[in-house]
Image (cartoon, rainbow, N blue to C red; front, top):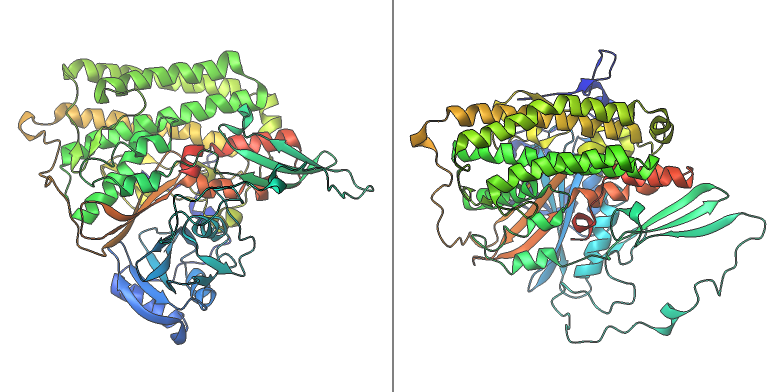
Amino acid sequence: MGERGGTDGAGGTRGTEALAEGATAPALPDDRDALLARALELVPDDAVTDTEQHLNAPALVVRADRVQDTLAPLKAAGLDHCACVTAQAYDDRYESVYHLRSYADPTTELSVVVPLPATDPESESGAPVYRTADWHEREAYDLVGISYDDHPDLRRILLPETWQGHPLGPDFDQTQPQVVTLREHANPLADDRRDSDTDTMYLNIGPHHPATHGVLHVGVTLDGEQVADVEPDIGYIHRCEEQMCEQGTYRHQIMPYPDRWDWSGAGLCNEWAYARVAEDLADIDVPEYAQVIRTMSAELSRMLSHFLAVGTYALDVVGEFTAAFMYGIKDRERVQSILEDLTGQRLMFNYFRLGGVAWDLPEPREDFFEEVRAFVDDLPHKLAEYHDLLTENEVFQMRTVDTGTLPPETAREHGVTGPVARGSGIDYDLRRDDPYGYYDDLDWSVAVEEGCDNFSRVLVRLREVEESARIVEQCVDRLEEWPDDDRTIQANVPRTLRPDPDTEIYRAVEGAKGELGIYIRSDGTDKPARFKIRGPSFSNLSALPAMADGEYVPDLIATLGSLDTIMGEVDR
């Protein structure tokens, strides 16, 4: 199984100590009933009105004016990771759900449910307790219409400020015109009242710029040559992915969508996120043989993402187009050819199915295994070339070492996960810490670096490619030896799935960018009543202002690139 921590290049171990540094040791028990009882002891009696049992965790139902009094003691006791905030509208009320986990053990989780009236829904904000709730609550306000009292910056985050109404609210009129006022067309510099004694300047980066890696607009305030403030402006590619999933059936129509959340190639990891939550919701057991295929294909998909991240990052910071960037694309092509043989697609795979995978390995199997082994065996010297070109390059080091600093406590506050968190010494990986698939039966390590800078995040991704290759090789060994009469690729799943009404569940997997979670609430039909996506890039990007403060513009570009954000995953 995955080992905790890694090495620092000088033979020392790291990870466990970094996790404990600056964090409160969890004092909450693993057992659900005991966890709920302990939570009730921690939270003020007059704050809790009821309790619930979701499939993934117990839940406290609390008053809207006691949210902070509820969240603060839970965070102090060890639930230091607010993974997601889900907002939803019922026929008779609104609701916010805070999905709380522990960075030390993500299987220790608790939900905090805040019911609100159908008219004028307003709740106390959780952002003063969990910094990551800032963006999540803004999205809840923007799309659903819930207001959060004393929120630090309650305004729209995905839709333009001129948007009329809230699209996911029950009273939203889809036929109303969306009129942009004249004020929005006015000269933005007409009322400029800057102090003539300062060198402050406002700089727009994007939304159509190679350095933003997608349609991301970054508003930057410069004081001289240094960054005084950064504001990521998102929503340019918001495509209503959650609502499209709510219109699809569990069994057949949702699975093609997850590939589109991350077009860097990590689609199979995303498919697994939906498969995991839906299979737990419907109590489906996946055959072991299919789990091995899933694990192998997901790691190949992770490698696709990391090759693109490293190659484009080289282009970002040192203009390395002729070597590192082209090598990354070339190595991606080899992995894409392998996955094309397996899935029939090079990027939008749609290979996972509820209960397993779409079909078995391609025939002849020996040729497929030989192709995979040839790639894996060739990888060590390729990774050595990446290190020669990048991590041992003095110019690359000057651009990345001690820039984009993200201390572990700041990363936790923003709900950062994946390579970005592990580059800050946070030893958190759901493949090991909340095991699924076949990961628990394999020998591999979690890559963790303690530098907390842009350089560390590159090292983590390169080491993760190496670990993914180890996982793929072990999966091939097992698949080669698997008995012919035991190659079951799918469980016997009913044609139509109708989970019990008001069943709620949040499940997550370790996507290429971090924790990719999905919340589903069923209503007894064959389609979800609520489908919420927790994209890791969303929370990771929210940490950019803290990382870039006081840096220079080139450092800002290097820092943004090190996050490896995919805007389809941010905007959804």
